[in-house]
Image (cartoon, rainbow over all chains, first blue to last red; front, side, top):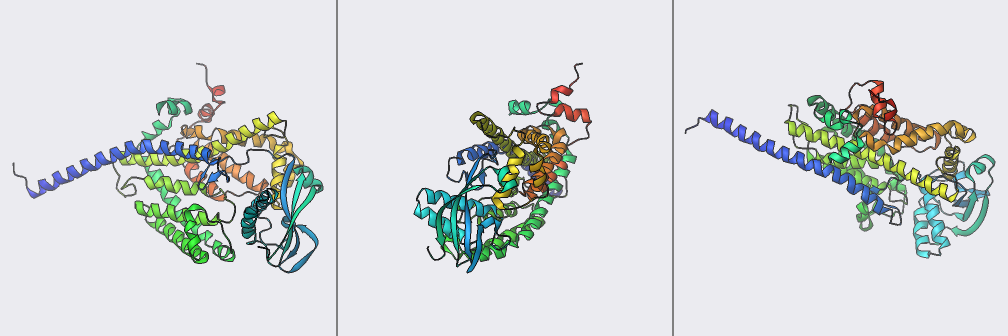
Length: 176
Length: 315
């Protein structure tokens, strides 16, 4: 059987389309398995990541955001005595600086202070120095701050300002 | 898979499987929305370029694994490289999302950018969804973006990948909701304040605002009158827990899109926690879902998880 050039082109197009169709159908079948598998693996990964110290392995996360309702809280905070060479009088908590301190409303800073508190209370000097290094992104030298332990009931503290504050340790710039 | 689908679907008539069979129109919508997603990526990357000065002023970092190479180079130059790479890949993504390698570059650029952003002591979560969605979209088939109509298998693959994105977004909300339920049961058992207590919202708001020393538009009001926010909190908890069901119930896509957007707006106005990119994603993938169809209010009510049976007729 002899085929003309035009017929050969048509035949080629047909074969190409057929192969393309088979490939795309195979790919569809593959995707139908891969997408659910990815969802399950990510979900399981998120649960497994809870076993790590940070409770997540970026970007795998359990998505357990705010699982616990605050009640009687105990947190660590920083009381500032000196910032950028300026004496803070009276000393105030970092997040209540009224615009004087870098990132004073930052939740990242709050989390760093919690890490510092945990390291200090467990006498983990290496961990403490590591967190202090990160904290120095916010603290403007020369500085003097005091790590304090604050216990309170959130609604009551928010309305009346009442909280029990226990000083833990002082930190000065140049101590690292 | 059939078992999973039938478990989450309200009925055969409400199943997303039927929506897949509708053919060309859902595909055309999905294709447009994916293009819009990549355009949004460019917009977002542009707005994030302001983070440049912040990275330059920070002296110390604790690099996450995707940017561990910053330990061996000057971090300031490394940060510049990441910013430029992330922006250029987003720029390419807005113009050429049809190429797989461009979509990989978009994902990789954003992964590096976020890893850098979260290398200063805390990992945030407001942009995780953008990252994972960009990862799932890598798997779009060849020719998905061509102007001429692709084969049926290609169209179905695009719709399936799109559904995968929707299912992932909804899964994260369900996990967040289940975490809250689990936490509430645990705290109830211990006799502590828990998520189903009428004052729980006030405690959440007060605690968050105290942590950051921040204020919010409606925070003080709901601390003062917690019982006014309690019903809304229960509705939002319901919306979160049953989000994953909605992946299999297209008639609820618009409703859930609206609920989840309201949830983020209310969290922003009370707790001052901003998930702005997520609002856009939820709107894009659910308010304009290609699987949605014009349905009656009763039809939507019947499809509601947990309460749908109340609206079913006995005949």
